[in-house]
Structures are given as structure tokens and as C-alpha cells.
Length: 453
Ligand code: ADP
Image (cartoon, rainbow, N blue to C red; front, side):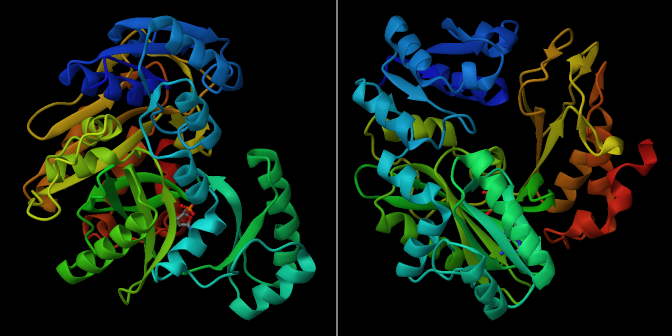
């Protein structure tokens, strides 16, 4: 097993990884930017190294600085968390070349799945259903326009290298398509350094349902059932739950088998997520794979009892999976709300600043993954996620009631947060009934902020 793990991340996920290491008896190294000196991950780790100024490109994305920090502190493994360098194949390569273990899949796996068009091709090869679309990137508008017509509007233009809900544009007709195609390519180039885009049919009312995968170096791949992440704003997840209210045992078996088949085909090693869109008629389509731990992993942990981060570390150390292929029981229901330092009534504008009052919620079945505390200043430089509130109950109704009271009892003052917005969403009759799709918030605009204005 590793002796010392460097966590190449910040915020709640850095703390999450540090806690898992502690349980495994592994020492930890925190890296931090000048803006994160007062961060809890720095205090909780055994060692810490400042890796540069506040902007992520000068610190959390600076590969040379991170490798140097690992070498100086004698770390024998690096956990990338999510975001930042987590899906950067070059980073994984350099880590390995420096004789440090990368807690994640191989660079080739990151590369293959990081290119969404290539991932689609691999899925099709494995006979996993994919959303109707172009077989690969489309070169120009002359090629794209007839392809869009063949698919039938609406279509979605997606950056092959995209992620985080960015680099996607929906076109409802030919006029819109020509405009959005140029915009999408420009955005893709600016955000991801590549203007390769491909087209998919835009499904009208799908649910986002994803399967958690674990694979080890000994050829085992298992899935730990699904998460439903249908509550989204601008293609970004806000609330996730497990199991999916739309799931049946047959559908779970079919989606699980498809996910395992695709992961096995590439000999996947580590934790990963196969994302699918699920239609009302129970047809499902592979959308993409994320080759890292996900923000929403706790709902799987709460319902399966398995610690996914500890599993990631064990797998990277060459140990065989401890999760049985079959034979674990799903227990109850879990819901996660992403709490952001944002003002929902002002178009979710970030609201950085100093937290003056902090009262976390508690009680049975309540878990809070966060790095904030009273007196902490949320810096303006990074993602505005400040806490993940996760509840577990014996059934969905109990989990809903727990989430309601937990959000009510969660007090953060000094900055504006999305807690009131989340509370409105979970009380909405459609969410209560488990009857939402990815465009739920688009339709229910009043939930976004009027009550707070
Ligand atoms: P990212 O990697 O940026 O998160 P994804 O490909 O995972 O992008 O898509 C994010 C979200 O965008 C999905 O959960 C879904 O809501 C929406 N989406 C993506 N592709 C389609 C599609 N073909 N039809 C309908 N919605 C889509």
C-alpha cells in the first residue's frame, strides 16, 4: 500500500480524499494556491506545499509544480480528485513517468474516453446503444448541415473534448444550426483547445441516469448501480439521487451490463462513470464516460455501503476489488444537493466572500461533505461548490423529508447560497413524485429565484 498520497485538488474533494487516506493509514500531502492558505485541506493533511498564485492555471493546473511537490514530500501516489487535472491524460503520463502512482485509470483510457466522439465509437463497437448522431467530428458547416437535417431537429452540437456542461449548443432549426455551429466551435476551441464538434439528436425529455463502475488490474469490473442526475441547470447537475425513481430491476440489469461491457472492453482500471440518457419508454443511450470520481459519488456510497475513494486507492495500489460482482444489497435511498456560493435570483451569479455564521445540519442519515467553516472566505477564483449535503433514508419519502429538514437547518451567513433554491426544488410536486427530466428546471423557471428577489 502507498505510504503518502498527494492530493492534487482543493475544497471538499481534497478533504474527502484525505479522510479516506487516514482510514487506510496513509499519510497525505495537500497542495494549495496562495488563495487557499486558510483552507481546511491544508490543515488536515500531514504535509502541505504552496504551488502558486490563485488562478488555477498557475497552481492547481501547473503539472510541474505538483510533481515537484510530490517529489519534495516523498509522496508515492497522487489522487487528482475531480476537475482540474483529473481527466488530463498527459498529467497521468507525467505522474507515472516520475515513478509516482496515479490514482485513476491509464493515460490511454483517459484519452480514449476524454474524446467524446471516440467514446461513442467504442460504445457502438461494444454494441452499447448510443444516441443517434454523427459517427465522429464534423469538419465544417457543409458536412454538418446535411447531417443535422438527416438527424432531424432539434440537434445538439457537442465539443468532442467537452465536459462540465460546457461546449454544447442546441439548435431547433436550420437557421439556428448555422449560427450555433460556428459559436459552438469557437467556444470549444477557447475552452478545450480543440474545435472538433459532433452532432447528436437532442432528446426531448430524457432523464440523466449514470452507472458507477469499478475495475481492477486483475480483470474484474463491477458496477454499483445507478445515480439519477436529472435535476440540471444548463446541462449541469444540481441534485442527484440513488436509486433512480425511474429504475426497474430489469432496466438496472440492462444498463449495468452495458456499462460493465464497455468498461471491460477497454480493460478499465479505477472508478468511472458511464453516463446514459433514459427515455420515458425505457430506451437508454450511452452519452459519455467520466474516468474519475464524480461529485455525486456519495449517493452511491450511502446506498451501497462501499467507500469509493478507498476503493480507488486500493485499486491503484494493485489490490483486487473487494466489492463483490453481485451480492451487495442496495440499502434505502440517498439524495445529494450541491450547495453553491451563488445567487439564484441573479442568474446564479457567484457570491464569494467571508462566511460569518455556519451551522451545519445534522441528525440521522445526514452527511455533509464540505470545506467551509465560520470565518472562511470563499475565494472568487474557483468553482462555487461549497458543500454537498447528502441524506440517506430507508425509503425515498424518508430521504426527502430528511433533505427538507436538513436544508431548513443549514445556516450559512455572510454569502448568498443556493440553499433556498434547493429547498424549493425538493418540495416541488414533480420532484417529490420522482417525475423529472433534464429540462425540468427550464420549464419551472419560477423555482430559480422569484421567491428570493
Ligand atoms: P458534459 O460532459 O459537459 O457534462 P454531457 O455529454 O455529459 O456533457 O451532457 C450533459 C447534459 O447535457 C446531459 O446530462 C443532458 O442533460 C444534456 N444532453 C447531452 N446530450 C444530450 C442529447 N443528445 N439530448 C438531450 N440532452 C442532452
